[in-house]
Image 1: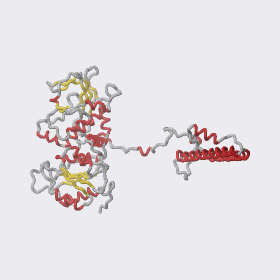
Image 2: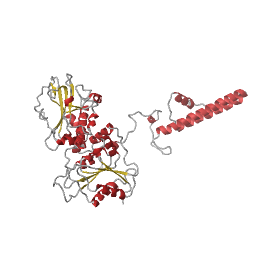
Image 3: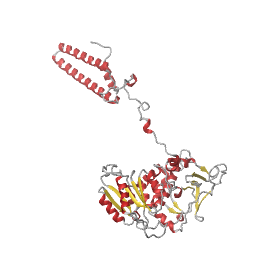
Length: 504
């Protein structure tokens, strides 16, 4: 039996060439016919040859047939699993000849994820402009040059208006600055250009946020986690905008990761460092200096005057409710701080116990009867681990570890609730507010981070200092009201993560 085609030769040639041919039923039948013909010819030859030659010829034939069957098995198996997206028992759509040329489709032809999975929900402009990357992009696009092109120095400023009034927030990047210790000023050789017709603030009339350094409250602000983090947060966003902005060389930004090694923070006042001072080194590896410690230099340097802490959108409008429910800016800042202190992100909601952390204020605004209240919480809720923490008494790194290990953060209104920034995603924040206080800052913060938020107003005790002295007065919440608040907060996590408890 003869044939113009030789499937064995075709298979051998294809195998030698490194391809994986796809064989349809007719080709498989032709291959089987070829094998039968080969066996038939071998048998006839065997009858006419001597015994020795018969044995050798038969052995070679058997080996050849086994090799062909092995290649056939590999080809069919590879074809089935490489090219069929459906199980072998499922009939798929008819394929064109172009689909069976023995090669995989290229990247342009490869199927992709349905577009619906890539759809992003539209974020209200109010939220995007304040808490999303749009905030950074608009700052970048506001770039304004204040020096004439032929000035030896350069001053690039960026402006933002997110505050509800007319205030415009500004930060600047200076080039070619030298420090004069006699004046305690950085000097720049800049001829201001005419800005008539441009809707930007005039140089010298930028908004002033300065506090008086001799004010006794300045020392308290250095120990206040909210005030300190707002300053650091604004600084990091300043650097981010500079990393997004091209410099004189259009292929290099005004600030790059390589610049961190040589960057140095200069503090303009003499306020104490405070427990959060190390955070200034997130984008500047050199130790921070006071301006009084700077030495005179003739070298021209770059100068960054960052956004003020008071300009931070998170600090604006904190007496009003907003509907924003996500913030790439805050999430990024949280990860940066945790990474800076080498605190690992905890996978939330693992294990049977729900960890409740109560902010134990040892100075003002204590919760009256708090020890008895939380003793009852431990007795009534078997799945709760309660820890009462005086955050002000421990290093910031340890504060971060405790926050990352918590499921519920409870506290009387105060800066300690800022630790909600570092809770695992989807946690619970509980705020007990002094009577008549309607601050919404921590409520809004919880919403931006995807936390659940529950609040209650304290009852005014019979004896108080002054009507509006909520800063210093302890707060009282009836026992039943407190337990109702804890019941809502704790059971909100009964079926989150690995927990699976009935709520009633």
